[in-house]
Image 1 (cartoon, rainbow, N blue to C red):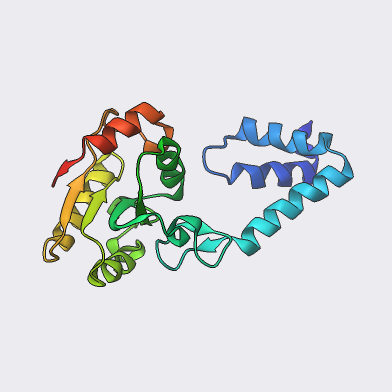
Image 2 (cartoon, rainbow, N blue to C red):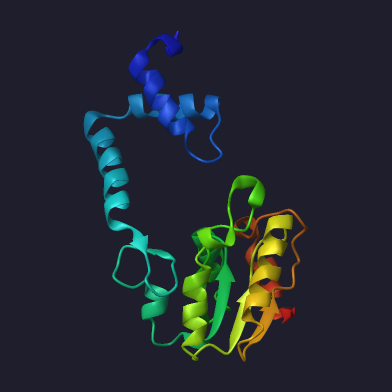
Length: 199
């Protein structure tokens, strides 16, 4: 019956466009919106529009922010000699929960994946090299996921950073190959940071 209600179907299709949301969950979400009051639905739609309008990339680390510069880059207490290179803003959130890492970040916004049309020029690598060229960074920690694409990206970046006079390390993983850092628990991430090794 639900598939014959055009506006409900359109709403479910929009939810279905979200990463990791299948048809069943998309329809559940659409029904959840129907259960909202008109005011709640308006607040929901406003939150989406506001997020799209206000959130942009930090000009320094390429992380997402709604300020001119993200809070991490703006924090004078962060160690600017160390940069942790991650593929996704969600990994920054996971790393920050550990409360052990005191350096800065650089978000690539993806990993090299020729099969999916993601080549190095589509990542924020040029911005990373510009930061390192400034001379303040002494250590780059490559923290891409332990997947085939993550490893390929890590190797590519390590080769690019070789000419610079900096230490390049890779996280020591307590997480199995093929899993995502954003789902790792704090203890696993803590051990990974503590046990990082030279490339």
